[in-house]
Image 1 (cartoon, rainbow, N blue to C red):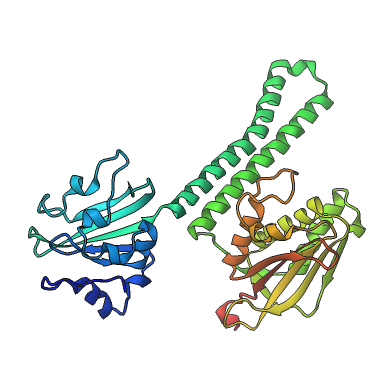
Image 2: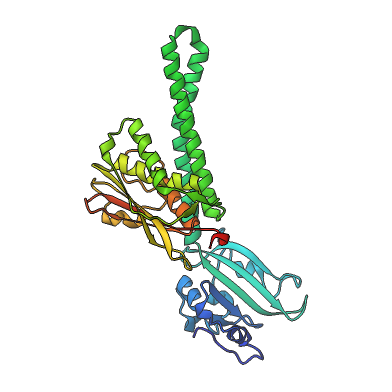
Length: 371
């Protein structure tokens, strides 16, 4: 137990308060350091020991500034700057800020001053210490997203600007066929920008938990069929696709537009990155959601090289690309977010024919009045 006691009256009170709530300080996810009215450490939990690399037995009983030596980003000693015991009597703590441990490791620190009265002497200094690695990962992810978006937008916008400027400047010099070709290129690039913006909006909603699902009855077999017909109309051979539907399927209530988005992404991946026959199996399945017996499962597989085993756990992360054939690497991240917003699950594996196999299962999602 990384909680100490002191001979001063009430010194063990923070530990006692936690005990009354049935909480062990070592169970807390963040570092917790508590100093008594004399500035000596009486609590130093396991997370604090892990983050600071200071054993609890060395910290307990030490002066706070010695057990937790912190500096600001300009190299100034933080405890001398803040002076919790001798500073302003109306101060109740310090807001979260980035500080440095010995060796230069950056941590997030918040302090709370517990006083005997509104302006009374400090009875406790309670310090929360958090590692910055999770925040750094988030910041890196945001930076990568901005860089990817900037890169993906530059190409179509450059094309749009180039063709429109050329047409405006030299309209009379081009034939109707040349004009049509340029305008078709501009139209396709505008569609590409629109798709990218839609992806960004989806990511924003997924990350914030605001992705809305508007459930309606969905004929999933017919939805798959429409995607196959679109590929055949675009020039893919009809015998490249095999659709197998196991009847009877449970009535599925889902957001038809978002289900179409999932199917479009998975089938496009199989066509673009896979080889051979693209097989889509639609079957009844056990519901992934507690309280429901049945669900609907869709499996999309191909006969290509498949996904390397070492990449399986990264497939649904941002910016993962299965090949060097372009794309933002955001599609499967969005697919996973949509499936999970429906209360479903999605997995990736190796198909019997050796290619990639994606399988998602949705709960039937029927409204309460149909139950």
